[in-house]
Image (cartoon, rainbow over all chains, first blue to last red; front, side, top):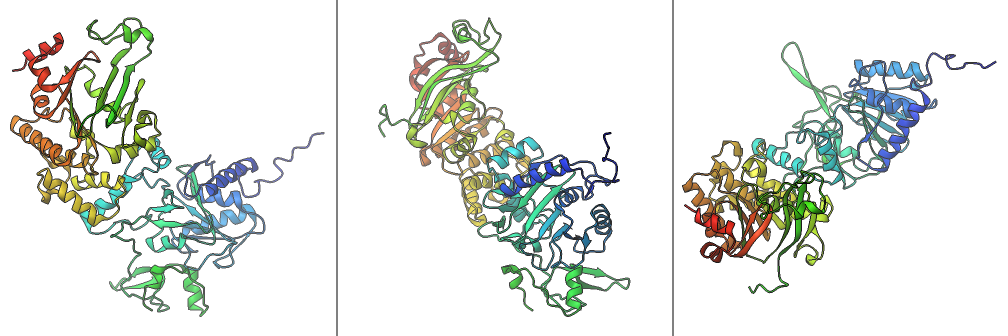
Length: 298
Length: 282
């Protein structure tokens, strides 16, 4: 008698069926082979709506194995709603160990931040991307932007930076500052703050980007050159906290959140929750090295 | 500069553009002899056919003809705005004129457009991006030419706007807020930003009032004398042709019907259509 095994388990390991995972992995391989190039993929249905982190979830679920240790953050925090729900989902679909500890994790999924702590060769960083097309602000047609990428025709992007400088005195891109990957493709680094952009350059970890709603995957392989777009005389710079320090730890060299209180007062707290915890417990987490952070005075 | 046979800047061979399906007879059965450019067999439209000419460095060539004669098509084909059906074109500064520029890859074509050519359209909306400031429009051309220094870009844009008599104070305003004549000047600034050896002018003064027309023509003539740019001037207006050009091609129904020195064509037109054109000059 033919036995039907298909419905023994309620879900396949990591929710997505194996052939779809295979498709996503194939597309990821292509993305890694052409750093910064947007690879179209199937973006299968998930139990959450597209645009709520499905891209990152597809990537995570396609690459996760039983021995992986999973961490997920939303705007730097392990405890915010999006992170908690997706962590529960991944955990219940795979049974893998989850963690808050950046250095312990093997897969880190993120929304809008890179961890403050340095990444290593054994880690994969997965981004949830809302808008994968860096040229969308200057060209609304997909066929045109594809052609522009194909021919490395980026003049319009540069002119938009020029225009911002001319009308506002600075390049007014807070999050999602466009970068050039491996001297070729201009890429949207998902809306991470400018603070995190230099940390993509020559990173030891593999960075995978998933845009579920827009159905695109792209990647930055380890040790790949990633440069923010800058003019010869108008340079890229990171956020300036004007000497402010974290009110809990007194630390200055981390991305800070400004907190508002009922009495109208404000202070700053480190945005990365795990980094903040480690500093509070007098641990010494190793941070990303880059020239912008080095310039900040202790 | 002596214009011998082999120091041409631009050489055009058998340039042809046909819309729709065509046969060998499409070209045979259309043209001025038939007073039509619609193929009687297939209904395809022969916009221009069998266009041959050479342009020499620093020379100004006029293309004149009534509307629908295919004169704009010729420059649009040469500026890669449309794709040709047949024919080839060679540009001396690009690989010593040995390679057909019309068959190059898009990337090379864009390089040629940015470094070796400029185009001024009749409608400024075709040549300028109205979402960018006028300085930004010039910057676009400079950036495409590999200039990534904002200070230098602004200096160059200032020079160009001064040269074309656009108030420099309005550099950071959008061309939509400019008058037609000013838009046309910004377009000219953009076209010559990278000092190209070749400039196409497609009905640049049409639609401007007479005094502005005269100023724009003056500007073009000055630029031509100062910078020695070779130009192809497309116009239906013989006075523009007389003022700007050294040599003229007369087109009708997509064919060249007469060519020669501008003075000669205006004084002693040979083809009946040229005669008609000259005699209808007000």
